[in-house]
Image (cartoon, rainbow over all chains, first blue to last red; front, side, top):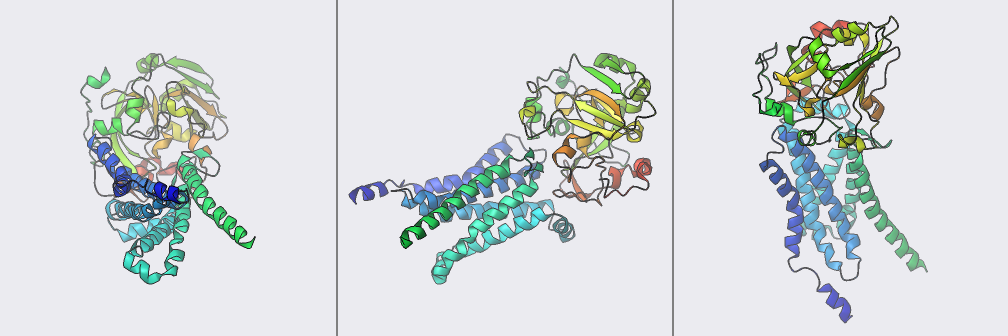
Length: 213
Length: 267
């Protein structure tokens, strides 16, 4: 028992610094690149892609917190879940605003035509809708009011990750399923989601088996 | 060192009055997967690319197959400036003052046989110089193709320069195709072989994703692409999107090539 307590104390006291560092890092990298003049020719295209990448990475980071917290002495990782998820939502929001608001200037005629033609937008929009709901219900007050339902609702984060994965498969240049073209991103994200979701499902199965024994 | 020269074009706008895209943007924003998928990394990665010696092979269904060195090629054909719009399939566009000569001049010299119906272009394969070619997910080398009548059209040029100076490696030096009414990926760079064929040749992007990249790839706002809008585009240097023109604004000259064809089938 004493050992467990000692391990618990390992949580970096500056944990918020770590979390915010992770959250702000993509923006800082983009800022440095921009400042060094690497994106000046078509900055919007880069900004849309990078904000999307950042949202996906932070979503995966947020999903990784639960499995990491299973490691003895790392239970504190659970506290990283919410801020990292909120950062993922913030980048997703930037992604959507840059696309629809800046690139397409909220031109609903153009955007409507895009939505009719391009299924990748449906998956992206659905994922964003879920993230928005989760962001709003992550307020402590709402969290408390929802009680046990909050937990069920927030499992939707996995649905959001899967929708993002389909969005990526459809959006890359090439044919991800036939492994042709510039398709490493969906495979990387797919592997990440697969491990994180698979890990949780395996643990659930393991626990229910143990209960029955 | 060509980069130290002042880039000079004789014209300042295309025939519609659209201003030239600045030289720096044309030479530092390059879709050139042989080097990198990052458009702004290509110029740096291509800096030491060797463009001499360079030999182009003209063969296939021609009466006079031959190889020609790039210097002889430059001597044989008088160069002219052509200011063309370049529309990338990704939804951005530029206006570029190319320096080159019509492809039909080269093809006529080789005397195509009556059975020739297509032209196949092959780019250099040299993974040591072109690091992107180490990516096994692409069927290198880059190949492209045109129907013979498209290749013989006077708008279709082989470019050796832009802005009044020789091409830089990142723009496809020493010899590249420019077909202004088609999406940019048709305009193959660093050409080493031109071959006349009877069958429609396979092209790199239509092999990678046939449902997205057709053989024809004519700029067409009516035919959507699963990812990018083809109805509008962003001209590099401008803030607002602008409508994309059928055949990239060259419909008057080229629409007749496709009479009776359903362009949503032959995309």
